Image 1 (cartoon, one colour):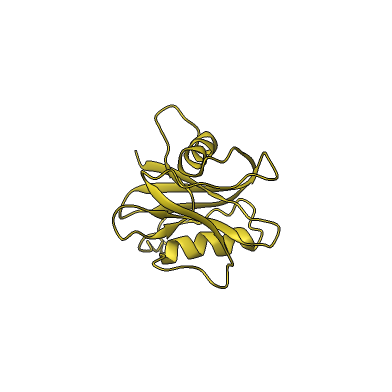
Image 2 (image 1 turned 120 degrees about the horizontal axis):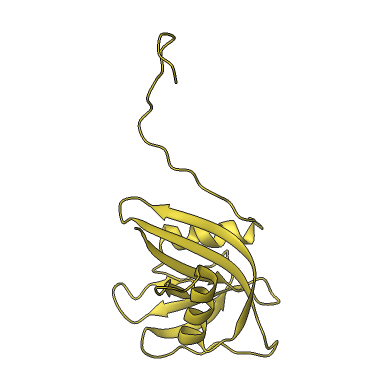
Amino acid sequence: MPRVGAAALITDDEGRVLLVRHTYGRKNWELPGGAVEQGESPMDGAVREIQEETGLSVTPTGLTGIYYDPEADFLHFVFHCVPTASDAVPRADGAEVDQAAFWSPDRLPRPISDFTRLRIRDGMAGAKYPMPTLVGPRRWFEDSEAP
């Protein structure tokens, strides 16, 4: 059974995307999110993680991406979310996250992974439920074989 994670793409009125900076590892910038807990839906996990990391209460408005990493056996969902309060200001939790800020998609902070950039690009392009399909080596059926 793959591990499951969820994150949120939250934009402001200027089209900037909310990113958080981790306090651990590479101290990289990332979409707010994390591991989905047992018995929790990916959408509920994203909402919980956003609240924990940034203090924001949000409403999911759509699924922007589903990603699967076969090497890590990790399934990841990204939801577009909007804050429930229009004047809400994200605040880093200080434990997992030491900064939370809006960034222009053209001027993203570093360090940032290609995976984070991909999820931002997909979400900003208005992706609606894209389902990447992974395939392995081809098995060819010859005329004499039944499929």
